[in-house]
Every structure is written in C-alpha cells, then in structure tokens.
Amino acid sequence: MTTVQTAPDVLTRARALVVPALEEAVARLNDELRLPVEYHLGWRAANGAPVPGRSGKFVRPALAVLSTEAAGAPAHVGVPGAVAVELLHNFSLVHDDVIDRDAERRHRPTVWAQFGVATAVIAGDALLALAHQTLLDQPGAGARVAARSLACATTALIGGEADDMAFEQRLDVSVDECLEMAIGKTGALLACASSIGVLLAEGGVELYEALADFGLNVGLAFQAVDDVLGIWGDPAATGKPAWSDLRDRKKTLPIAVALASGHAAVDELRALLGGDLLGDDEVARAAVLVEVCGGRDETERQARAFLGAALEAIDDVDLPAPTRAELTDLARFVVDRDF
Image (cartoon, rainbow, N blue to C red; front, side, top):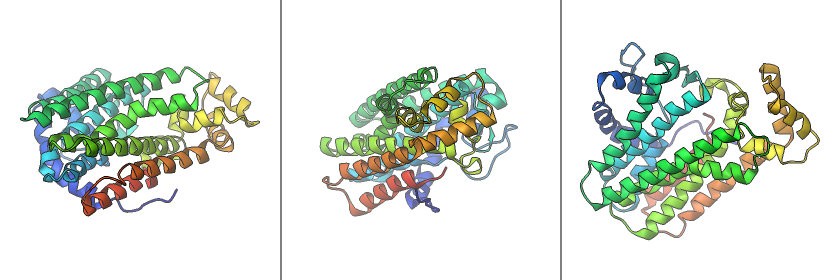
C-alpha cells in the first residue's frame, strides 16, 4: 500500500465544525465521568490538565458532514449526526480496550489502565447514552429516523464485537465469517456515518442507500487495513504494541486467510496460535507465517477491492462535484493510511 502523508482537508474541516458540539455534549456528564471521557478523547491529561490539539482520525464525523452536503443541506445540519457517530465510536474503543486488556492507545495508557476497569465501563456506557441522546434531542422527523439508524448500527456493532470475542477461542474461523464480523463491528457504523446526514436533511432514499453502501464498503476497507496494521503496523504510528492482534489471539482477516490457504506452513501457524505460550518469539514467528501463507497480500487486495466497491456505489448518484471529490479522497485515505 502507498502511504498518504497528508490527511484530506475534509477531516480538518469536520473537526472545526463538530468539536464545539462534541465538547458541549461531553460537558453534560457529571465530574466523575467527564474526566475519563475527556482523557480518552485526548482533551485532558489524567490529572485534568488540558492537552493541546485533538486526537483521533475523525473519519466518521467527516462522513456525516459530507452526507449532509450530498443531500444539498448546509454542513451544520449534519453536526448532531457527526457528534453521535463519534461518541458511539469512542464508546466502542473504551470498551474494546477493556475486553482486549489493551493498556495503551494513542501512545498513552487506556482509560481502564489509567482509571480502572469499573470507571472505563461506565465511561463507555456514558458515551453510548450521549450518542443516542444527542439525536433524540433534535427536532424533526429526520432526527427520529437518524436515531433509529444509529440504534441499528449500535446493535450491529455490539454483535460484531461478540463475534470477535468468540473467534478468539477458535482456529476454524472462515474468511466469510471474518467478513461478516467486520460488517457488524466496523461496516455498520461507517454505513451509518456515511448516510446519517441524508436522514437529518430529509433527503431521498436513492441517495441514502447509495451512501450507506459506500460507507459499508469503506468500513470493510478500513477494517482490512486495520487488520494489517494490527499485525505489521509500526507501533510508533499506531500507538499499539507490535503484533497486538496476534498477542490477543484475534482471528482477523489476514489470519483467517492464512489458516485457509492450504500452505505447507499452516500447521506450524495453527500450532503456534493454539499453544499456551505467545511470547515475543512466538508472535514474531506467527507474523512471518501469516505473511508467508498469503494473509497480508490477500487482505491488502481485499482492502483495494472494497475501496473500488465503495467508489462504484456512488458512481450513478447525483452529487455536488466537491462532495464527490471529498468522499473519494476520504475513502482513499482510509485504504492508504498507516495508523
């Protein structure tokens, strides 16, 4: 893959538009919840001191803003949707870190590692509740439909996470099962983010369906890239330990592809992944074997295929030229990123 050094301008534009509303939403939390949430979001240090700048890629809010503009509405109409999808995404991150026992995210301790598991659980719960409240507080029929869309995405996301957890105990996870899990865990929320602005703007069904399809495929491409980075990503860029997905015994797409490859090295890989010990030597060897068995090349190929499907989904819909260009740039950024 080719690394894109500069993030699309739409991420900066969406951040400037959405962060004030996101801050307003988080300010509704009580003091005990606000600090761990603001810490997770990168706004504050653990002692409450402000941290300059803002962390996170902001892909989902940018998609929500673009989907609003795609429907011909001003960007601010989509801000509640952008806030809601970003809150929901961060709920999943806080809980994922607890589930996976990941002690580091974005180059500093995760919420549970810094504040304890109980605090992380209720902080994640608070983010989830705020996401839905943000939409339910909005007037109009579009907001109600958008809230239903977010609820459906939440259900799919949680189901995908449950599958991901169950797969850790299996060595027979198929590629199709892995992709179905990714549809729930990642694709559903990206599909929601990519179409929620159309709902808030009360746009047409054809546009909504095209953008939802676009977002689903962007989500699958995003997850495929994430799966590659979860094994071979540079910790300095990803903010996670090397070979993190192998250490956690996850059955991500590269691993599922490798185990199904029929390569002569599969038996050794299966023995390593099924063994009691996964120290540095074992995970390093497993990473080599996954690549030898074709897991990395095929996952990168699938990421590019999902990118193509995403762009094809919006080929035949009428979009403002600048919006089409920004959607395309953002989708390509997702596939070409290295963090």
